[in-house]
Image 1 (cartoon, rainbow, N blue to C red):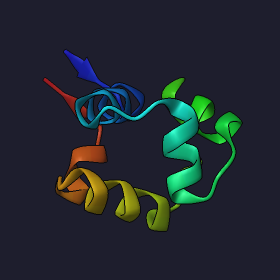
Image 2: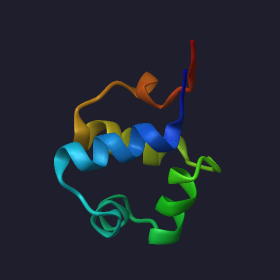
Image 3: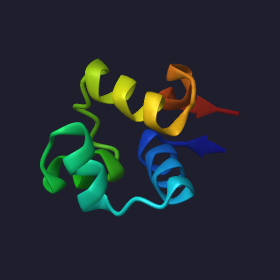
Image 4: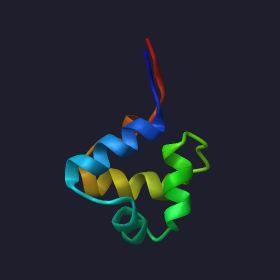
Length: 68
């Protein structure tokens, strides 16, 4: 099973009730950036990951891709 960074972001975003636009505004990026991350085209900075982790109260390793 491949759990992608994009799926992890989507799951966390929905859990807290943020839209893509709200998440983009919260971390100071464009909605297009969020969409790129959700389609697994990475390019996500460590700072953006940290802001999401802090907001969603999840560990940084949440964004690693797991292959089982």
